[in-house]
Length: 351
Length: 257
Ligand SMILES: Cc1cc2nc3c(=O)[nH]c(=O)nc-3n(C[C@H](O)[C@H](O)[C@H](O)COP(=O)(O)OP(=O)(O)OC[C@H]3O[C@@H](n4cnc5c(N)ncnc54)[C@H](O)[C@@H]3O)c2cc1C
Image (cartoon, rainbow over all chains, first blue to last red; front, side, top):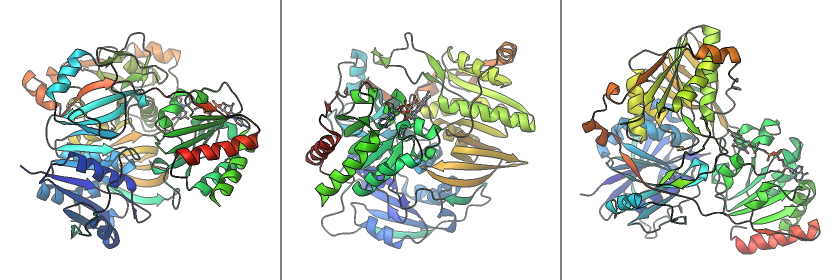
């Protein structure tokens, strides 16, 4: 029997988040011929975004408008999605593993009595690799392998465990299924090539009686900035930057390359920057194409947040700094000298 | 004010993962209270100190989690509930069901948990517990003020800050920045030994053999180690030469620049 999947998409600064298209990719990977993928879009003034989404391989785009949906509010979002879930009875929900997805997905999963697999970085089918490229180590014991065979032909979700120190493969044992995907790991879905568009269904959010949660204010500290978790290039500073001022050269390089600035906890704790920039086990997890660590020693908790980056560059005064043991390219030197030289070299190369 | 704190015991964040029989070996591993849950415990104790009331720490896991619960008691929690995980499937939906069943036996004004656990990192259980108990929830909070029947919180949304008011009872999960957790004091450790410590089994919470199987909606089929990252290339020359070389290497190796 054909199934329906639903992507709960997200926007930022009025733009569709890339991670939502990666969630769509996950749904496409799970879908079989005859299955339908729908997308939900929540907020205010959604016409433009809905039209954009309609250009992707979707059966329908559900644009749900409501004043209460301007900012993310779990109760209002769940209330707005409830009639849609009732109507579609989706076999699966897909969301980004973002601030919103981490909050909303388990609430929806609980409502649907669904299992959830969080923070997915790759999807495999029939035991074959689909995305990502983890080694299938000889670590599995025989019991586990038997189990794997029993689930052969199923869709296997790959996710990091112990802050990336291990890789887990999981399957669902029942429908419905809820999946959240880590940004920057699955390829984003591509717009349809045939020029066709999905049906856009507009609806007004049904008012939720007695909201117990009221969002009073949202302070946009990241407005206009590139989202750290989705950035393709991250320039991160550690305690080695020595002051808030010390982030300037990093910001300049990030600006030139269209990247985002991140930080170690050491830099955050020292008050050089906001905790919103922290990368690591208790901070954000980033998986950019290029990660440049400046004045960061490379503590295990920091590595937990960035070791999945495609290319890692380390700039550190101390040749013994542990960060060099995982860096693809290392420069031993003073970041205040090296970073501006790098900016200059990039500027020339890009001119 | 009656406050429940959900806490999980996790591997120390410094631990190396060694696989044995398809699992992460626990031999010689140091366990800690999940760092995010420490903020939750601290916040609960501060609320109790300010408003009076009672703090109940709850943990699901094997017998060793008693140690984590004793840490919470030594920090200032009043009582502990240990749910023995034997017979409870290792799945977030089942864990939440068990915890909600245990909490449902009492009434709480506030339930606090951590943003996620640093081992399995699912970020599901606390929110699922809120849903099961019919409570509103706010995740990833960095500030909490209670005034009568309302809590005002600040939430960290990937760097943006949201100010939210919630009618109690409600559930919140703690993000770094909420507070600075205290260390258990020696008198605290002594007192902890005399505080009530309740144990619950799967049967107590309604997990019978028949229900156990259906309670898990996901299952792990394997655990492996990630490919090790090899140490790469150290650049040489003057800083200028190194900068130029790096730009060349990055532009050739990575299309995005
Ligand atoms: C439970 C727990 C969770 C944690 N979570 C995180 C987390 O999420 N993220 C995180 O980052 N950390 C985390 N930590 C902290 C972590 O253990 C380290 O303390 C932290 O990462 C160190 O930050 P740092 O590398 O910036 O500072 P330091 O370790 O002090 O390193 C500074 C580095 O800068 C170099 N340096 C100094 N001056 C210069 C210069 N002019 N030019 C070039 N190099 C220079 C030095 O050689 C040194 O290597 C956590 C710790 C615990 C216990």
